[in-house]
Each structure stands twice: as structure tokens, then as C-alpha cells.
Length: 257
Ligand code: HXC
Image (cartoon, rainbow, N blue to C red):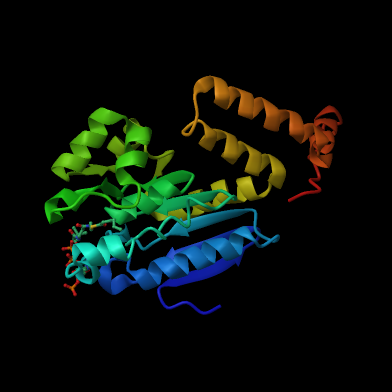
């Protein structure tokens, strides 16, 4: 598959997608988002891939939706055409997606980082939802995912003032899992992705699905959902292998990667 706006490769069992519109700081246009969704779906369906990694450039993960492409849209273009309704491809992936973020992750850039499952940030990363300064609001889940990640106080602060958070503030707020020096961002993010890709896939899928259930259900429903999936994993060869390997003091040899 040849793409114009992203670069795609696999390293071991990690599927890597790099946003690649350097002239526009990886601004997200329709063409890039269609390619991103396609690439995520292809890795999700690929048995040789256990985890994905999404990244941008040193200067920008992505500076938001492409303002030049959006500027002239009318209400009917946006509403009638259901603008950006299909920009949720990452959130629909079953396999985990690690975001490696350096530089600007603004607007739609912050929103696609939040569609990923784990954000590893370089110390140069800047996160924000500046849409308010353009006369709009976030449109691909920003008001919802940011609020769930950092709580109402900081989400309101960011969404209503449009200010950016640096990596340290984003980590304190709970938006990012780890902050690392910019020079080691890809190494550190790859280590996380490789670790996940080296686990038994059914338990990885189950862990992701169960954590995500916390955002969609009451505590009692979520705990029940988790227990049912936990029970079901006892039907896998890998549960037998994982626990046997522990007892035998050796590394597990997963059957379902
Ligand atoms: C289109 C963009 C862009 C964007 C940057 N560029 N961001 N083009 N859409 N979102 C382009 C610039 O026009 C410029 O192109 C080139 O990239 C380099 O950007 P500069 O502004 O010259 O760089 P710098 O001075 O370093 O400033 C970086 C920046 C700034 C602070 C990130 O570019 C910026 O504020 N960008 C917009 C951020 C933003 O508002 N994002 C939210 C978008 S709305 P030229 O050709 O002029 O050199 C959104 C909605 C999401 O995301 C939901 C909708 C589905």
C-alpha cells in the first residue's frame, strides 16, 4: 500500500505509523485521516502485528486539523457532510496503539493522541485544544476524552482558554503515561510497544477492552465485565502456559501472539 501523507513500517511485531506532512506540521486533512484509518485497520487485521505505534516529527506530532482545508466550510458542508465523523479510526482499533509525541499535539493532534491507548511524551511535547481561538471547539472527541483523562477543571481551562500544557503538566494531569528526553522518545516508545507486542494477544485485547469499559459503564457493570473476561481467559492455552512458565521459573512461550 502506498500512502502520500503517512509512512508505515513494521519492526518486529510493532506496526509503526508516522504522520508525514512536514510542510504543514502534520495538519490533519481528509486525505491524511483516510490513510491513517486505513493503516490502523491493516495493522489491526495483521497477525504479524501485536501493537501499533503512532508518531509525528520532532517539531510536531500534529498541529491540528488542517485549518486551510476547513476554513471555507459552511454549516451544511460540515453537518450535511458529517465532517470528521470518520476520524475515529484509532479509537476503533482492537490492538493497542502507543502514541510517541514530540512537539505540538494541538487540536485534532491532541485528539488523535488521546484516541491512542498510551501516550509517551518527549519533554518537548505541547498539548492543547486551541480551537476556541478559531471560533470553534474540538470535534473529534477532545472535550470528552480530555475531561475523562484530566478532569473537569483542567479540561475547562484548556478548552475555554486555548492554552497549551507542556509535557510535565500533561504528565501531572494524567494525560500522558511517561515523559522522556526528546532524543530517546522513539526508543522508549518502541520498548513499550515491543513489550506489549510480546504478550499473549488475547490478554492484551482483553486488558484494553476492560480498561476502556471503565469509561462506558458504572463501576459495578465494569467490574462484572472484567470478571467475565477474566474468567474467559482460563479457556486460552496462554493462561496455562503463562502460569506453568511461572511455576517452572522460565519465560512463557505464548501460542497466541
Ligand atoms: C493548516 C497549518 C496548521 C494547521 C500549522 N500549519 N498548523 N496548516 N492547519 N492546523 C502550517 C502553517 O500555516 C505553516 O504553513 C506551517 O504549517 C508552519 O507553521 P508555522 O505557524 O509557521 O509554525 P510556528 O510559527 O512554529 O507555529 C507552530 C504552531 C502554529 C504554534 C503549531 O502553526 C499554530 O498555531 N497552528 C495552528 C494550531 C491550531 O489552531 N490547531 C487547531 C486546529 S482546529 P505556511 O505554508 O504558512 O508556511 C482542530 C479541530 C479538530 O484541530 C477537530 C476537527 C475535526
